[in-house]
Image 1: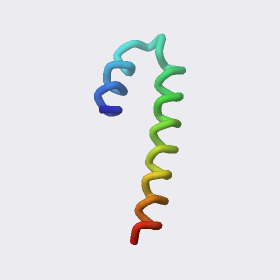
Image 2: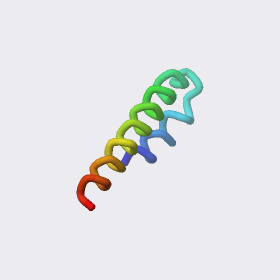
Image 3: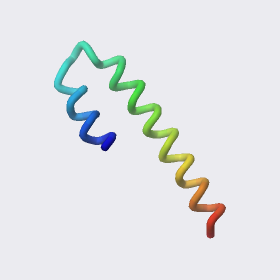
Image 4: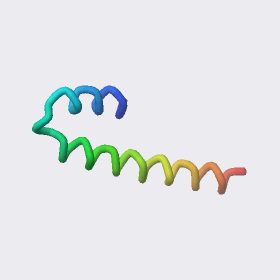
Length: 41
């Protein structure tokens, strides 16, 4: 879902700031998911 949105944003150079924001949020979500996986094990 996020990957598709990133592709749509990347087409428009004006949305570079949004792309950075989405990438940062994506990394934070990924890190949070890894932490949850660690707790579940």
